[in-house]
Every structure is written in C-alpha cells, then in structure tokens.
Length: 221
View 1 (cartoon, one colour):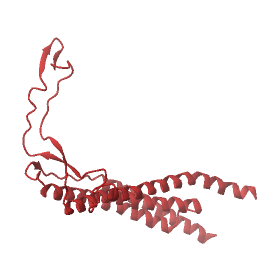
View 2 (cartoon, rainbow, N blue to C red):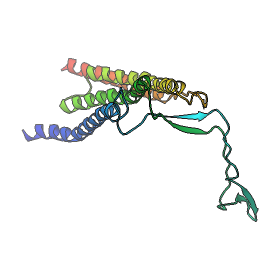
View 3 (tube, rainbow, N blue to C red):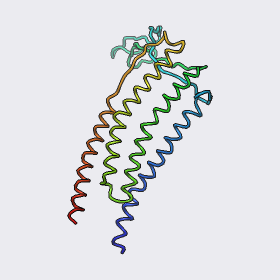
C-alpha cells in the first residue's frame, strides 16, 4: 500500500507550491483591479493617486549650459564632474498630472488602469487551472490542451489589445487637456506578446501530441 501512495504524495508535494503561488498571484491581481478603482480618481471617487500621463513635448527644451565639456590629457570630459561627456537630445518626455480631471477623464483612466490587469488575470487563472489538474491527476488531458490554446490567444491578442487600449486612453486624456498643444502623440506596439503567444501555441501543439499518445495507451489497455 505504501508503494502506491508514496508517488501520489510526492507528486502532490511537488505541484502544490506552484498552485499556491499562482493562487496568491490571482489574489494580488484582483486586489490590483479593485485598487485601481477605489484608490485612484475613478468615477467620482478620489483616492491617493491623481491621473497622470507621460508624453513627449512638442517643442524644444533649452537646457542651457548644464553640460559643458573640457579637454584634458586623456581626451574630452564633462567640465563639472570630469566624467565621460554626454549630450541631452530631443524628444523630452514630461509627466502631466491631471489635478482636476473631468468625469470622462476619470472613466478613461479607470479603463486604462484596469485593462493592465485583465491579461495577467486571465492568463494566471488558465495556468492555475492547468497546475491544479496536474495535482489531481494526469495533466495530459484535452481540457488542458484547450487551456493552453486559450492562453496563447490571451497573450498574443490580449497583450496586443492591451497596448492599443493604453495608447488610445492616453491619447484621449491628453487631447482633452491643456497639454493637447504641448505634446507629441506617439504610439508604439511591441510584438513580444505575439511572439510569446506563438511559443505557448507550440507548447499546446506538443500537448496535443501528448494527449493523443495518452489516449492511445489507454485504448490498448
């Protein structure tokens, strides 16, 4: 009897810490979503944080003579610090704080902040479900394969959409403020979510083979 129970206990002990960590991650993600609404200037609710946006300035900034160079025996160095010289170039990014946001700006801010948590929340839940099923038995089941395909879509499409939502919300907030004529609106998209999503899709394909082999073995018994 001991020879049968010991592998099960060891399998449980190996997987359980990961399941616990993922459960903690889920809890913190939910707390982050709630905090984005309650502890921030949401829909009329004022907390400890004011909405803010970082944006590139649409005009040149004169830094004066803050960085000057001098010639020494070893070459050119910064005159004030004697360190390697640097230059300050454009564009310059400024931090704009909305001291009295309108209702629409509050709504956009909440949508922006909450959207940052949605992909991690769904992704963590899917991984948590896979780990939990592995603790309970064989992980190579069709349900886990579906979860991996869903995870690939969430990372690739959701991660890209999250960037678009963030850029659009940032644009809306700036255009409806006094900083509209002072800033240069730029948008950038990272392909990293798509690359990671493709990697998970490859894992899902491998999982599909594992599920098929498992079914074949069970059919032979």
